[in-house]
Image (cartoon, rainbow, N blue to C red):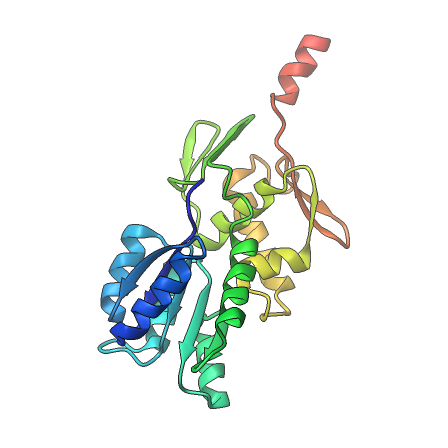
Length: 239
C-alpha cells in the first residue's frame, strides 16, 4: 500500500529536517520545499496527500499560497506558524487552510491532527480503481469515465466521489461529507455540499433529476450505488 505523502513547506531547513525525521519514522513519505513557488510546482507534479506549511515564506506568502492551492488542490492544509494572533488564524482558515498550529507545538498533538485529516481524506487509500455499470474511476490517475466518455471533475467533485465510492452502498452523513471536503473545523457547509453534489450529478448522471449513482438519504446524507449492469438490458431479458 502506498505511504501517505506529506509536503513540508518551511524556510527553516533545520525544522524541515526535524519534521522529516519524525514523520518518516511514523510511516509517512515526505516532500520538502523552502518557498511557496517551489511548493506549488511540487504539488502539481507530486499531488501530496497533506500539506504542512508556515505562512512566513520567501516570495509568495502563506496566505496567498493557500488561496492558490484551493483553486486546484483538495488536500488538507495545516498551517504551522509562530504567529499566534487570532486574526492570523482567521486569515489562514478563510484562505483555505483546514487547521492552524502555533509554534512551538507538541509533537503528539500535531501527529494526531495529521492522522485525523488523513483518515477523513484517504478513506479509500487501498482502492486504486472502481468499475461499475456505465462508470469507471481510476483514483490514482484521477480519471473518470462515464458511458465511455472521459469526464473532468473539479477537486471537490472528485474528492466527494472518492469518499462516496469508498463507502459504496452505505449512507454517508452530511456532516462526514462536509468534514471530508472542508475539514472538521469548518462547519455549516450543508448548502455548499448540496452545490457540489448537484455539480457532480450533472457530470456523471444520465438524468441528474433521477440519479442512479448518487442517491439521497433524506435527513441523513448521500449513498453511492453502482449497478453492475444496465437495468433496461435486464428488463429486456426478463420480458
